Amino acid sequence: MSAHINSIWQRLKYEAHVFFIDHGMFRALYCNKAQIAPGVYRSNYPTSAQIMRLKRQGVNTILSLRGQFDGAFNALERDACERHGVALTFVSLGAREAPKARQILDLLKTFKEIDLPFLMHCKSGADRASLASAIYLIAIEGKSVAEARQMFSVRFIHFKWTKTGILDMFLDMYEERLEQGPIAFQDWVADEYDPEALTHRFAKRRITSR
Image: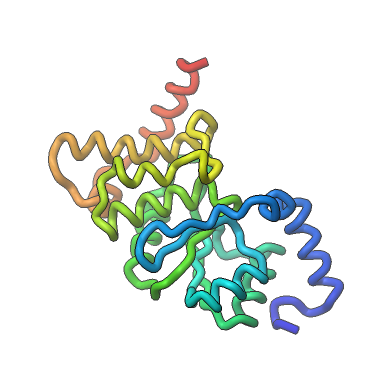
């Protein structure tokens, strides 16, 4: 038994929580795994069986965008990765609020250091995974914002007219800044990006669109 899960009862309790409370029942019906770049994949939260298959396919690293803290889903994922020999790393991102500059910079640092091939995921693979995938394409692959925006799609169950549309607007702000002149994505985040301005702008748009 893994050091993270100390009994069969605890495992059953965690698995029940993940299935019923953490929307595992819906993920069982639809896995939105996709390759976004050579050696780089995205998906919703993976089960132990999926992690085993990823290992067999050559994926040796998983990046969780859900943050590193105690919880049933993290315990089960740590346990599965430990048993199947997959490295697990964490970055915390939000889905319904303006991304924090520090979190985006941490994500960029992780992207530069992580071993390929790797899979990144959040809970449903819809919003945080879309943001991280778009950022990877822009900052690491050198793709345009228009190309990266394809990561925000109903194919991944992302809907821009909901509160998670603030992530789409984050890309909009960077694209608007590029119209003024070239600036690297990381430099824009570190030196110019204003989460409060994004929050205000998004709130104003939602009010006027009602």
